Image (cartoon, rainbow, N blue to C red):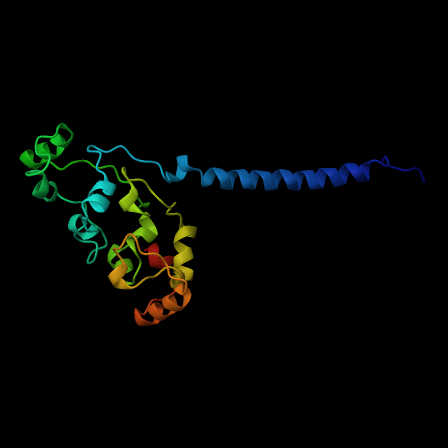
Length: 216
């Protein structure tokens, strides 16, 4: 019986199959890289604000505690944006005539709020409660990075679901003593796993990975 296919057909078929798989893997890798690129995640991209507020100056240089400005972070889902009055507690005395602070003074005079640009902005279908995380021993810097070293505020982490699930699946790797939650300089000790397991029991932390926890 005459040969139907040319003897090179097997080679062409193998090359086509493996080539197709290689192309698909390359496409998946490219999509993953684009998905994690800073122009989409805005990681380490400083956002323009009506007043170029420096956390580094206020936290690191002046020693302000997070809770002085973010007054509701321990008792509310929302950390709170400081009112102009909080700013003016200091700036009626310090840099009172600085041109860069005129928007703050104008807001204080008129009662019209400054329109800050959200840096950590979750989708509307995601529920996040600051107070729960703070009271379970999740440090500010765990999510927001070393804010005390940021002259302008940027997003330190992607805030993607996969990033959140790293902690929800293994909270013992990330939690710290409650008294260290607002300490920007705190570093996980060598026995973090043992400490974390102890805190998980003490603070009654659950490994919550059900969709309904964040997506009500």
